[in-house]
Image (tube, rainbow, N blue to C red; front, side, top):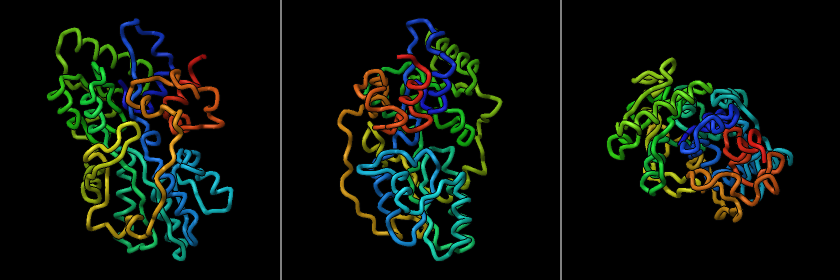
Amino acid sequence: MEVCGGHTMAIQKFGIPSLLPQNIELLSGPGCPVCVTDKWFIDKAIALSQLPDVIITTFGDLIRVPGSYSTLENEKAKGNDIRIVYSPLDALSIALRDPSKKIVFLGIGFETTSPASAVAIAEAYKNNISNFSLLSAHKIMPPAMKALIHEGIKIDGYICPGHVSVITGTNMYVDIVDKFSVGCVIAGFEPTDLLHTILMLVNQIETSDPKLETQYRRAVKPEGNIKAKKFLDEVFELKDEWWRGFGIIPQSGFILTKKYKAFDTEKQFDISVPQPKEEKACICGEILKGLKTPHDCILFRKKCHPANPVGACMVSSEGACQAYFKYQQE
């Protein structure tokens, strides 16, 4: 199973499954941060965008994700101030330029994007920028990988995320190997990287020797990015977090530490939204757990397609449904 949306897209784009023997199956896991994010998060962002003097700043892949009754794209079309940024520091710059507005950054992603949010919060604290806040849906990957094994899903080896591991280093996968005897190989994104990674996992299985290995050595160091990890440890602490398809996974999400609580959007605003309304026919949650593929969904290529995404897995550029839609024939 690959647990990186970038790997999912690369695997489908380069036709990796067609190059493998039939006894090797690749499963797409919960590696797309947009896909695993609670619809409640989108509903809260939409509710905030409707408040006076509030500017919502977000990465572009969240704009079209369906909430219960609308999307950020639709709210922007109505005149609400919603802006796509390339970095949380861009959002912080908006806060500096317009102190009369309250700037909310929608923090989403795993260990790869979380350090940038941490830096923005630290800068806001240092410069006393009180009109900036973070609505966090940041998550960490290992608890979800362990949850899949706990649920009994058949996984013989993990293709571990390259970009995440650049930040974290390699040690966070040790428990998965030691406790569950499931091999882990950290992979790059080129077709040769992925084929090499699969070969490394096959060799582990053939020799009954599960272990942690790094294929993506040109980018991933055992210690990771020390400066980025320092910011994460300073600004964030772990909390229980909701994942699509899984429910609550203990200690799998980031929340601001006590020192930085003033920059927590949910502390600055009284956000109250109804229980989210889910599309019953959408099987995004089961796809994220590797139990089903997009071809198993009755909505796929019919009601649900990139021009009219029903679920988050079709919206995101790293979602399994969009990857299958773009690169697999019917």
